[in-house]
Image (cartoon, rainbow, N blue to C red):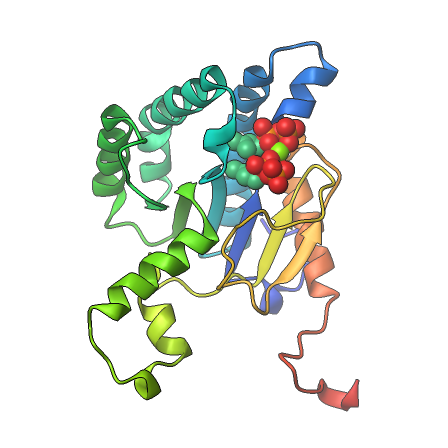
Length: 242
Ligand code: IPE
Ligand code: IPE
Ligand code: MG
């Protein structure tokens, strides 16, 4: 159900989320950081339900960055196991909701094979769904994505003058994915941390102080409310000349 003050006509088609603040959430409760990651599962599911309420078609969430390997090995191991078990626990529920699950990121040797198997299973099970596409950015870096695109393009042997924005876009991990209209980052940090660098050229950015484990659909609606108050100009001038 759309909250009555949100305008039906200006619901973002694609929302990106940098799910940040799990460690701090746990530390404030004298819990190990990993408990914060575990508590983030409820936040993710409620955000999916919120997107379904609003009719958002694409939700992309940052689950593990190419830089997160720098964390202590126990935390990295926890995150690998946690994401694997989350997929196993939640794939039926997400499938029943009509959610298509897909992944963005490098499937390199650092990702355990058991995690890759679970990713493939979730992707295969839900590939026919179209209500909402949930893209999990996992072992994802915006720069790595652009590097991977450039590598694919290089082998085509194109005349340099033929290379355009569209050439790059077509070689990103999901060529069919529209650019995000709105990117939300939780936990009060004002940075992008290598999330969807190419795609956010004209996204509206909303930074919220809420720590990710406390995030619920009401916070999503609040971010959409901010979004609806913005005027997107794409370098031009808005109607009325403002
Ligand atoms: C985000 O929470 C989750 C991941 C990066 C995997 P953090 O673990 O970064 O939490 P803080 O930022 O340290 O509080
Ligand atoms: C970004 O959060 C990555 C994810 C949410 C997965 P980080 O916590 O890793 O980002 P920095 O280190 O604060 O920039
Ligand atoms: Mg963080």
